[in-house]
Every structure is written in structure tokens, then in C-alpha cells.
Length: 280
Image (tube, rainbow, N blue to C red):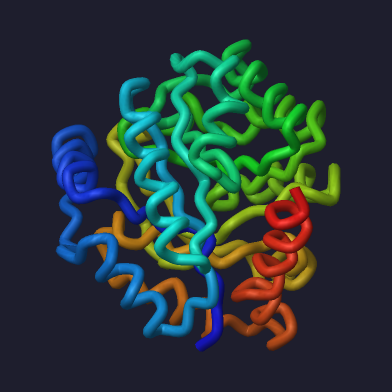
């Protein structure tokens, strides 16, 4: 199957090990996948991946430069990997343009739930202002996070990012459970996109914070068809506790048009690369 995976986490060995420990201790989730970064890359290519968006985010400010050095190495070794690099809100924002240039990053990844910042905070706005100036894309986590619910990631917190800036944005995980907000954001401007990682697994996971089940379900078929120009496929591999290829399988079974499926699987990502990565 031909696809572009727009949500992958290829990490250097020690960071992958630390990430699994961090997820187990902080979130109580065990990550069973044992493959290293090269094995994950090879597996994705074997499944039909044309391109990969590799995402790294800094859990601590000191991780930023080492992770971006890793991203540069990946990019040099694999021409089909596009890198969305690490930055922490406690890093110096004035350094961000130089980080992009030094490590040849294609975009930035932020994770409010992990990095514990509000997407509408002054620190976040300063980061967005730099991205606006240098016109680089952002992938940002949206939706529930296991140990803080929607404290940092409620869709209403992204309003200023969407309404006040024009650089390309991918809202990871489609603001799951809050597709009504998503409709407004996707209608607002042309270069706001979403990836469907975590919403194609069709699971309900209990949230201790919210004291209820969170639905990791896709939106309606009508929604997927209507916004098929704005949705990118993503798997979250290898930081998953389920079959990493279940999103592909579930997407293929949806009762939407083949045209919409092809847009989601690869055409939208290929257009994103052409217009917002290669053109910059």
C-alpha cells in the first residue's frame, strides 16, 4: 500500500530507552515494540511508505541540541525522511532560526502535554512568531494526554495559533473527541492540516485524570470526506502499545471514497512537502 507516514518517532537508542521508561513511570503504559530506529524505518519502507515525517520533542531543554543533531544525521542518510525537530519552551527563542539552519530541519515539533506549557502562553506565542518570520511548519500535539487530561491541550487553547498566524500547522491527532473545534480551525485558513494518528485505532482508554473513557475514534465518514484535502496519515510508530499497522488497516476499511483515502494516505502529504518544505 502506498502511503506517507506523517507521524513517526525515530529516536536514537538511549532516547528511545529513556522514552519507554518515562512513559511507563509517568503514564503507566508499556511500549512493547523492540525495534530500533533503522528497523522501524526498514519496516515502514517495506509496507509501502514513500516518505516519513520524523518527529522529536524535547522533554527537557537540554535534549534539544542532541535530538536535532540526530535529525540531521537521519536526513543525511535518508533522503525520504523529513525532520520536525526538537525545541523546548525554556530554550532561548532567539536561537531557533540558527537551530533550523544548523540542523537542516524541515519543521518543528511541540508537545504541550509532555512539555507542560499552554499553547496560548506568551512563551508559545514567541515561538510561533519566529516560525512565522522564517515560514517553517509546525506539528503540535492536540487532544487528551494521559497524565494531565486536556489541561494543556484543550482545542480552545490553540485558537490564537490558528487565528493569528499564517505559517503551516499540522494539528497532530485531530483534537480527538473535539472534532467540532477542528471544523472551525480547518475552515479558518488553507494551510492548517491535521494528522490522524491516534484516531484510527478505534479504542477507548480510561483516563484517571478525567475519570472517564477517552474515545480514540475517527470522526464521521462525512467529516473525513469533507476535509479529505486537510488530513494526513500518521501512525505514531514505534511509540504505540497496539499493532502499529492497525491505523492503515482501519483506514482502508472506512466507507469513504477511494479518492479521499488516497488524499489522506499520500497525496496531501506529498503536496505539503512540495508547497511548505521544498519551497521554503
